[in-house]
Image (cartoon, rainbow, N blue to C red; front, side, top):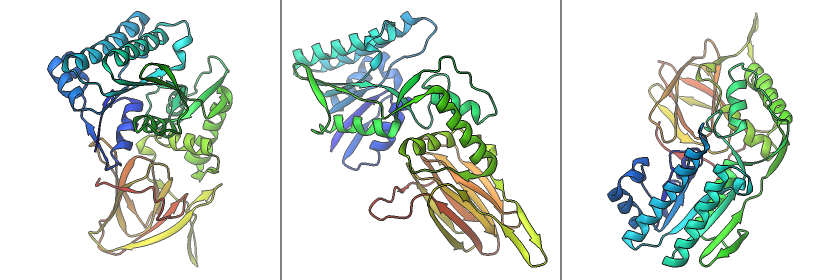
Length: 379
């Protein structure tokens, strides 16, 4: 079993890497806490347990650029010192940045940090891999901190108007794609385009998977807002970038947006309720559930899913993976409504009534036992 430690595991990239690695039974994640950097004993205990350390801990925003530089260099120094004192030489995977070559102190801190790790690997027989990372987007990024995508999603979902500072073309990579590169580096996958940069040191330059003008990005997100939030319409999800952007956008929708009540058309024949409008393909299914029974307790990493209660009373619960807070939604078939499941949220549905519960499900990818994208974890 490969033992991996992640500094900065609570950060945007670190959290996604951590949660993805948890799905692999061949990996043991060595817990890391931010205060380890200030506690020599705890940091030494951490490094001696790791076969590989992914160094993600860093500061990238501060009003004083010198604080960014000094903090990032200090984090590299204390990690190297801990390895030297304990005489261990784990494989260190470092998150650098394309800003290395730019004239700013953040880029300088990344470049000098890389050089320090290279010298350590050369002198101590360690292995070092540097990843040059472009702009990253994905669910749970901090607005006004991690990326323009996070900022735009947060504002648009809350009826705010984002401001374009410079309408340039930007290169983006989705967090799931980036995580796979990290995992490949950890596992020494030969297919990665790595180049030697020193003795025992490699570098992987990660290309953006999408180039888009900021104004076009904003317009696409506004389209999601109008179609999805206002009219309940799922967009076309065949394009991988637009699907990733849509799944990212959904995670910024305020929780009080749900449950969304359907428009119910009633006449002397009965009633008609439209369950879902989509611009994409998908699979419809339904379930019946007897009283007190709970279904689900699983999560998806890429699929969009809708639960529509059409008869009976239900409690739908969601919990973001890695957190403890549970979100409760109560639905009643007498007032048909739906709740959509964000990715990385484990979810379930329970019959809390005295009669049979009937639920209609829509998911954008049909069930495939070879690629279910379903991971079980209790809410």
